[in-house]
Length: 255
Image 1 (cartoon, rainbow, N blue to C red):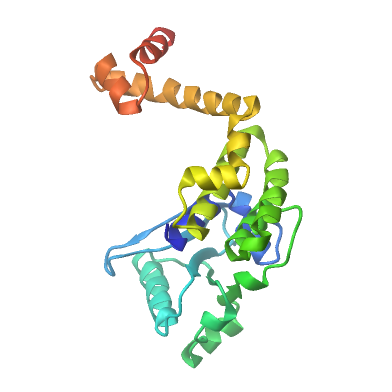
Image 2 (cartoon, rainbow, N blue to C red):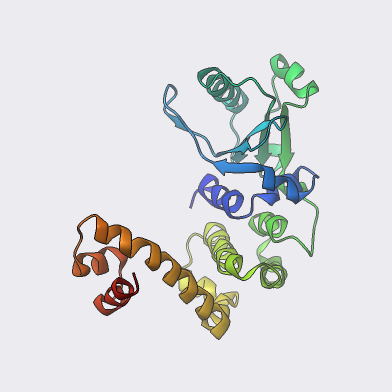
């Protein structure tokens, strides 16, 4: 799994982690919508952008880098200004770069000193993220950088944080932990990682299964009527959604 894909899912699921990393309140995420954007002129998709919901807040471009790249800042600033120009953006903006380690950062070119001084361009380093017992977002960042001997302890901290989340977010958090482990140990099978770090036991709990079932039913209650309206048969809907025909029939009767 590529790091940009992993951290896109982290920011999408736990948008408050961006502001925690910036040393600000995670509640600021309530004022933003996070998504990736396609810059057609450059044939480039961004790691992610936080779009402000209210006037006065800056648009925030987020990039994650896990390898050295001497030309990175030039490409980043080109992408930022292409987007601002194409969309006639008149508000404030920020570009935030997260490097895995400080040693990978080639340094911001002097031609962008004015943007740095204005606070528009910032670089931070995952290896320097403060340790925490209370944040699942910061804990996930630490997990990616953690030496193997300390991964088990980090997983336990993340599980404690996950249990404190609202019910609807808990399964998403466990899936993020799983995806971070797959990125960290790419040559080990998923099932092996789940068993090694205790995620199998979590997934087998009655609580986890109940929440997954609730999410599945919510998805089906929305998808089945929509597919029926489009003319799909019950058998076709069951095949599309990967469920039993009788399950689809039940939702057809309910709708």
